[in-house]
Length: 175
Image (cartoon, rainbow, N blue to C red; front, side, top):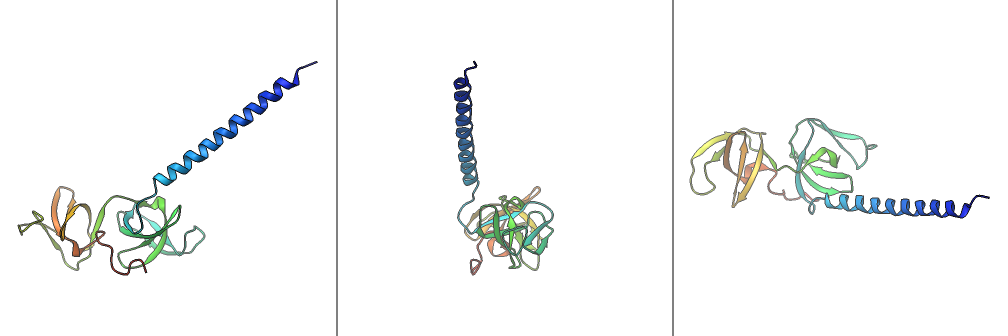
């Protein structure tokens, strides 16, 4: 007659180990998700792909309000869920986007109607090294006072914050 008690305990041990492993996996995934959560709302982000849809609500079932076609477009996150971000675009429209569509690179957009000067230094030196065209997307460097360092390819200079979208949170953005 075979000994069934041995196989019963082996199966029970395997189930306990599998359950414990599952709990460890669930806990580890939950901690990883929390570590990827960005800083407090509001904060700036930018568009990762060349094309993305902005929706009415935080779900793929919600209707599309806007189709964005500009990689790097700076957006202000004004609300968030675990997987969705409500963003404010430079024109003032508010839509929901999946977090996978957004990147944390620091990019700004020139909001002036004419080219803005890029100065050699942040201080009193008013030597212009280049001009940035309206709607240009530029990498953001450090900001000090009323100016921020921006760059595009090999050109680097300091621009006034007032002409850039992606630096200061606009008044009424959280309303």
